[in-house]
Length: 528
Image (cartoon, rainbow, N blue to C red):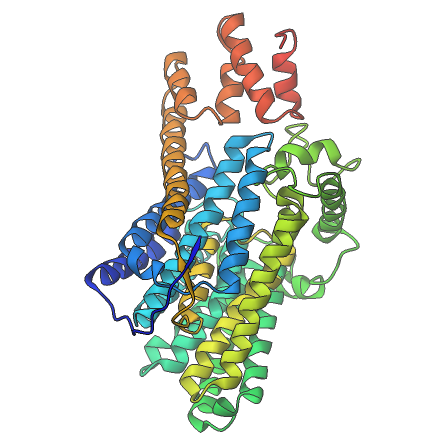
């Protein structure tokens, strides 16, 4: 994906670059807000529209910024990321459920495209407006969560896992608040008015109300990064204005915490002191969800040991885990025997090892390590407070997503993938000129995979709409042809109609989830 060439010219923003910026800005807002109203699909009605927004934005922005991306000098991070995507592609080709594998692979590919596009826009001098849009997206996610917490009840919000706002799950909002806080703090440091600094209070309040222990740990890690940076960087340590701004930001964060705890809300927690209880149990792995995570991690890693090179396939953890689960494993869904509660494990890193194998996980870990090392170098070599704050925001974002990803699924979803990769690309130092560049043909191949992901998401949404609004067999058959990878559709069709038709869909459902008891029973007597 690289070619040798030398270019020492400074590239300014072209009309196409500015249009790519607009696409990225709109995409950042859309990926947070878009939701479908098909309540029968409580997870996918949030996931699929956001995945479509991610893919469409990645494809359109990359095409518009194509020239800028091909001018980027290829770094170790790029080579490692390319290797990770290649191994992920091989893993997807060998997966049991290739539909799920394609879906997960497309999210990774689109995230990489967003990263390279953001780098190109930064090199063109367009990082500030891009970062502004990303900060706004983080704030909007927090606002929708707060609206739900304080009584707003609309069809775009989920009634479970409140206050999830337009993300449908309180944990997802918490993750974004945690790794998005560095962007809000950077905006507050740069702000010329109080109202532009209020984002810190909004995001902190939403973080408290979610009661996500993983996000709280990530928040603590992010704040530690900022405090250490203030002491390590001479540019920050000697800047009195930055210290005054930090004090004001801490006051705003404290106001956000106080507002969340003191203003009455509509959340109905079972505990009398829910927030204190969450703090006390933040490191409790002896019982409850903490104990369940340990069981899940152990069994998932055993699964990875059995498939060390390529894993079980991107997105296929839920397909394979039931066959490896422990007795009375809390990750299994008792109401649907042979299925898991969630489509992925409670950790990005466990998911990477189990689904894509140890080599791919190592490559992505090295990507993160080299990005962090680059951030430290940016911080130490910063000549003024502005450069140092940008480097600190980069380190805070990386640390926040690492810590949250240790205990929850983060980068496996569309919204975090968009926001994190875009932020990292915009915050990193400009690419050095000269050396090796991205090859256009290889870039087109990556864009094609993301475009396939967009088409796949659109087809899934279309099939979901038919399932939710029509009940006749002809309509459901049409939906199954549009989305052959829908286990729910295939199982429903396996239970009605003539034997031949039922068996066709029963075998399809069983092939998608071989451990699912419902699909096994439906396919019994159908032969091969």
